[in-house]
Image (cartoon, rainbow, N blue to C red; front, side, top):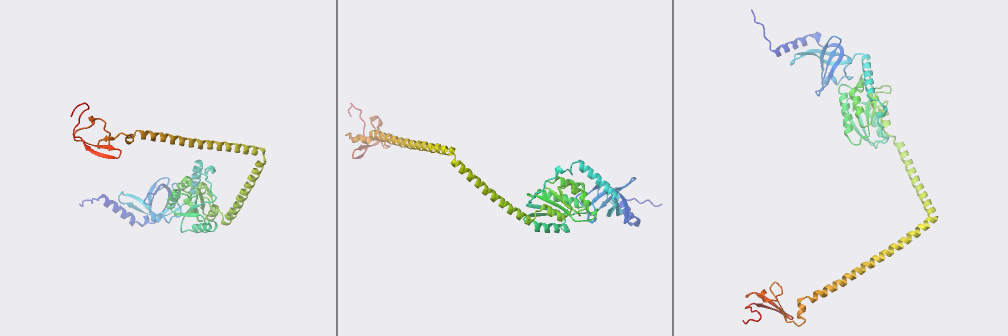
Length: 407
């Protein structure tokens, strides 16, 4: 009897994976259902469950396939997917690897949109009082759209022709497909971080309702509402309306119309500036004439005569006070000079040299210049100076004898 084969876990998962992938009935199959638990992590892949009233199956769509989608998959949408069944070998979970996806009829999509509209309306995202006003003469304009579409060319052409003074800041973004919402929201955030942007144009050219489904996304609607810079939406043609249009501060029927709404016409601006200059000059001249007339009337008024008389009187009083201040200053200086002469005379009287001029024969000082007037200030061997009226003698103490004592 043969012993049963024992599988490792990974071997079993690998075997099941091969069985599923080799089954042609499970490859390139179409499955319809409702999207649930839809999420897109940083990897860029889309993960969701496809459900109906009785069951569910996990699905994954890689980002390389997502780029080609013409609509933005959302929870609650009925879709038809094309994919292959396989096993994620690590976990042993079988799932559908989706290659393509289409919305299944417009009925469910329309119901979903109406529900989203009611939700956002109740939260005040459509309220007129929450709309931000558009600057009449914008200095910096942000443009959020695809670089490969016709919309960007139309916008640039019109702005260049109508209002070349504006600085343009273009943020390239996807305008359809699964990555569109993410890049559009990132663009709104990035333009809000720049200083001085006056208005943002959110634009996309015409397309089918599936192509424009990105602009019905709730996340994008909230990003528009959150923007501190006013946003002008210009999505599709004049007959196309999206949730982004309802949330935006201003809706333009086309990208070209958005550029015209945002930018004043250069010729109209020149005429406006010319008229403004004329009004300013006329106003200035008018004010000058009115003031001249007012001065003439006041000059003839009696009050002016009285006032000028008072001014002249005060001027004379000021002149008199200035004269007195100057005289007091001169008197004080003279007083200081007289006191200085007295101090000089007093110092002259106490000057030791003046004693010699009075007939006294000499003065004696030590080597430091201090005057000596008692024998107690002398010691044998010390030197001293004798100051005479006609010179100085250097001496040395030999002996000291007090008065009344013999040597």
